[in-house]
Image (cartoon, rainbow, N blue to C red; front, side):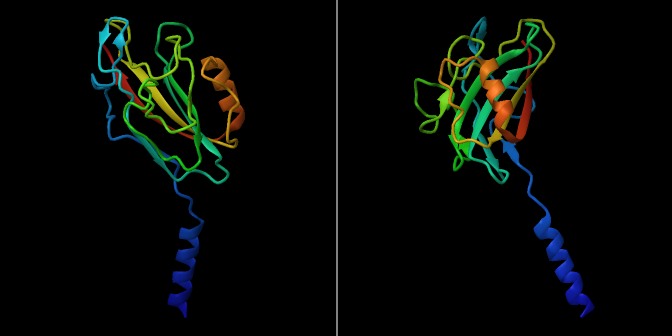
Length: 179
């Protein structure tokens, strides 16, 4: 009887323990590869957005968004490299190069809005030559709404405001690049 009670208690503890909302990538390590680096602004990389996948979305998730931000950009306000949102709640991955708006690789109905480069889609790392390594933060947002109600011309600040209003939980990856 005592053994059965211990097993029941263990099962109850395990059932009550939630899984962690996790963002992962097979393309990213601690440093950006030339494949991800911008092809422009003095950089000559492949400008391919990394493959991303996630699991254990929190209860109530109705859609997802992904952003990439350089907190070390010498602008006083950082630099937005990628904003993609209105990813359906059944979505659990973005393939490599999904940020290339010309290739239409991103999930159907997803919106990629304007970055600080002035255009929608992924713009890879390209810090000023000689600067310290820049930290690039890719954040996945689990949202409480199916659509943000914004379009491809929405500014990063406006997208960020809407994300702040609808975020249930978020998960991030950080990688670095220096030239």
